[in-house]
Length: 181
Image (cartoon, rainbow, N blue to C red; front, top):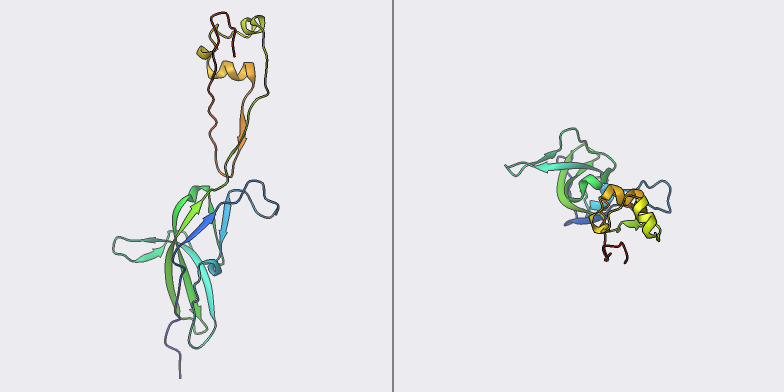
């Protein structure tokens, strides 16, 4: 008697994962990464005759509807999802029985970054009309370039799990004598 029937592969009906925070209490967890294991996507895969082993890999769906591993990808114990994966990623579950027979299932995984960025503004600064002239700032500060504002007032910084873009703007009003806020 031989086992000629492959195992049953059952995947979750979709999954959402969040990229880790850049400040993690666990030093082994790198920022901007979500680790996905086969157990996280398995929905009770089984075989009638033996235990099964589970492996996970990145896949794509061809126009014909067939799923295949991404070029250069392999099935293994985990995949790392990064900021470059934000959005939907297709993953496959490979289920293998003791006889070496395998079956597969696939699902979309929504990769999200739910941690908001942190912005650190330059310190408050009061300047006199003399300081305004010495810095080369125009009488109407709204006309100053970003570079001149950075030199005169400091640069904002920030942190996030993924890449950030920092933009600046001048708000308030200053009259032609440089008075105002």
